[in-house]
Image (cartoon, rainbow, N blue to C red; front, side):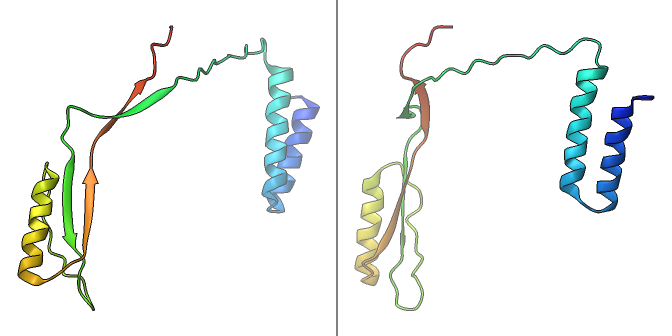
Amino acid sequence: MNGCAACAELAVRRDEARARYDRSAETDANVLLRHHQRREHTAAPRPRSRRVFRYVPYVIAQDATAEPEYEARCVSGDETECGAESGVHSDPAAVEEWQRRHTQETRHLRYRRSFGDYSVLEPLEEVPS
């Protein structure tokens, strides 16, 4: 603030730190200047707001409205993987059948299987408002 010796001194400290490329001292001066200005140059101090955090226990459950997805990819091969894929199916039996047929055709025996589903978090019990 204009005419305040403390503000002027802190501004000089900040400018000197900036000239020395001393970012730590510059930050310190800025923080001290802000604290001083809030304490000495604010008409009414701002009331501190309080926040209340509540722990709410949740259960992770499979989303019954979405079907899970199954798929497999052939990773057999000496130098490189075969890379053949079953595609995405909603039934694991379809993927297993694809693996059997692929093995019959190619004699490949190693697959990477993937399963995907959707989940939802549900409160363990009702929480009072």
